[in-house]
Length: 269
Image 1 (spheres, rainbow, N blue to C red):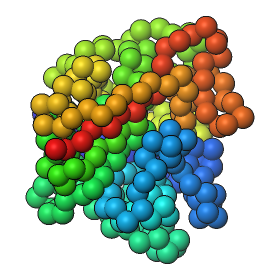
Image 2: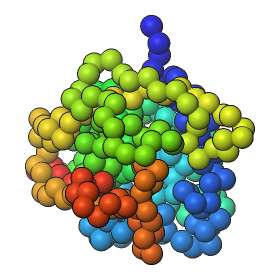
Image 3: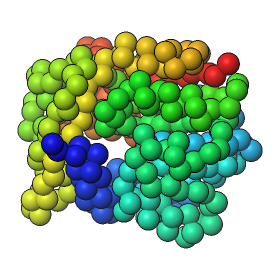
Image 4: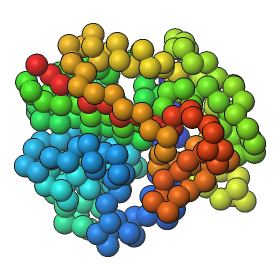
């Protein structure tokens, strides 16, 4: 049997080195100079973090985690990739921003972390890497303090049905919308890499519908506070998108009303 978790860890270790030098997508130099990596949606909706404990799940190399630290949160970042966590720890030291980073599979987190948190945060292309959304939601509920909030800002799940290869010119369905037990295997050039280097990787992802996401959180005992959908996002998911002066990506065809991003907040009673 394929160890999907280990294969994805290898994949994200390779992507860490590429993403670290991607000025357009991550801009580590700008972050070190004082810029925030957080987008306008989460900055507006999750504004009151000063002095609160914040757990960032699937944090990659911690730019968002450290951006929350700049806003006064007491932060812990968790990620599967040891290369990403090593870079996150270096960035914490270089910027003088206090943060704790843990390298672990999210499903093993209850075995290595005892704390409870005011806020649990995750964002930006995270859900389709998870093999079991119900276990994920239960882990969130486990680590939240009573009265704590979970905040998610994510690419819209309906986008996952479309082919997002670099050469597509229109919306073409390719992947399932509803969840399947076995993952989807994707092979190709690593995102943000130089095509001339021909760096290729294999990743395993899972599709989830909107109802899967909401029902997992509800079943874990969380109360949905709000759900918002947006016609823009921070990522150029498809080649036929255009970037506005605000840095956000939108459909070139203004008549296209398919949402690109959503956010939600859920609370623990």
